[in-house]
Image (cartoon, rainbow, N blue to C red; front, side, top):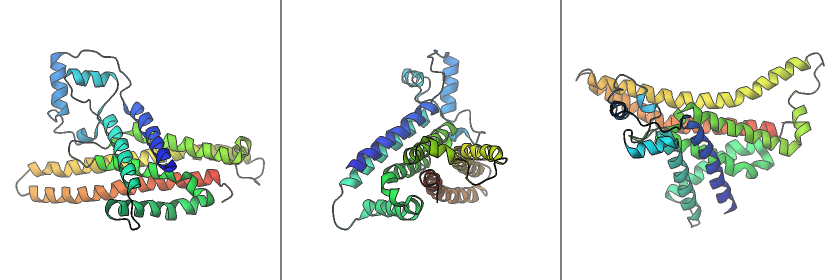
Length: 295
């Protein structure tokens, strides 16, 4: 039960900052002119984006041209923000439901969840964190499933992948960055941790250069996490949209286009799992390096 509450708290910590950053920065409520409202509504329903393959992956206002849409826009609630909340709520509900399941032999969804959880624990977390594995498991599991749910939501028609928004992936990467550095400082102490940034035993005249290299390396880690997840998620959706767009070119091209789109859709399911795993794996490696620098 303790792990369940830690996991739910982590989900809130993941979804709320990402939602705030993903929301538009200008929250002033300006009444739009009737023509602007009609244009916004047409764009949201694809009326002005037929030639833009990125239209369906971009963030959009909800219910444009309505009073409800204006209210949501004034508090920064967009489509990607809504997807973040849906992912967090779905993960909480799934965790509670699976956690309450009873029986000596897991079946169905519980069996699948346990297989994924145990794989991450045995093949990713324990090799990198050793005796501290159980301490960090709830957070690492939550990162994986939260990102996975956000990725998979993008494969549902009319929904969107919030991880196709660089603000969301940057927030997740930034939170991972703060988390593993905080855990490293907690384990070693602030001064020893800072001293460990530059490896010991190097000549003093190389030390300034190595300090710059190590600081740049630390800064590049969250950048790599954010850009890798964002680029992979948005690229697949754009390619899928382009391939499907050829279906209107000719009756002879349509079957090939639809077949290619189906193949890309299946591939995107694999990519959704893969990118959640890659983010979680790299985060765990960085956490292990911070907590156990001697290894």
